[in-house]
Length: 373
Image (tube, rainbow, N blue to C red; front, side, top):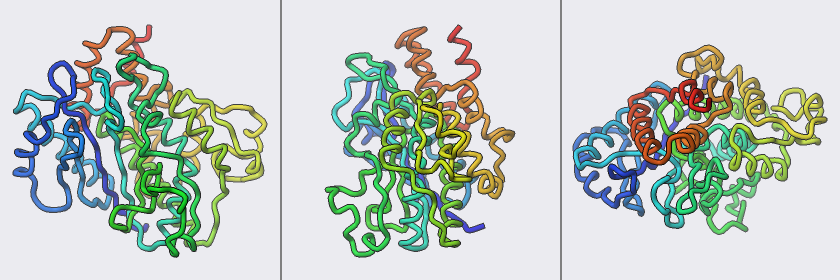
């Protein structure tokens, strides 16, 4: 199995006891670096001083990524609490009127050995952006309107993530690919990384509430990367989902998460392997997003097995199984608590979920579902 390196950035909110964003990251930064040693892992002071950006080192496997993320997030909690502050991991703040661009994301960097690999992986991941978006939404409340009409307000309003067009390797080498875009990095997925690093950056995600959520996303991305390399090594071209279908499904995912209604690409109705576009599904007008994610996982079954992952049985994948079973994302869990108990309880739960999730504890979706009764 080819080693695929993986790095992760998370932008986490710094809030006071009322859940209000605080411009006090400099105070936290003065303490955190003393505890770091070696590697590329670090804390970054973002342009918005209300967010603490955590950057893991370059990791070789999922266990290492998990350990790095737990270690760094817990350091962040310790630094925050020493100043009577707290951390919250959601894509928007449910208690503060956000400034334009002030949101909280998660970026995954997957290592590639050549420009061809970068282009292949970019083109492969973009086919799955609606499924990845539907699974990861985590910003359902927009202030000041207390609006809950989107599962990811961050994605609906953020100018720094956009649909990623397919790119040509030849044009990429010439430096002319996507020249119509002013800033080619600001896409859902992009090989145009800062400093032209040998990675593909996946930018579409809200910051994940817990470490287990982030590891599920990382696992799926690694499996996609492994599948793309196999296609590349065998000179196979994956079936191409039309831009119109991807963009329609992407909009649906941003608005409705796992309850989104996706459409299939009629041109792929005779595909024997690629997702949900084959003939038995294309006659349906709409397909539930959660089913499409299950088809994606089936498509990636061999690669997940090579990673030592059985998503239907493994303890680490329970959060994924529960999300699909109950059609509940982190965004849904926030809305359930908000609508049943109000903002004060939601604030308490977000602080609790974030800290427990930083320790590696998954969100108890079954318990939250009980609140719906």
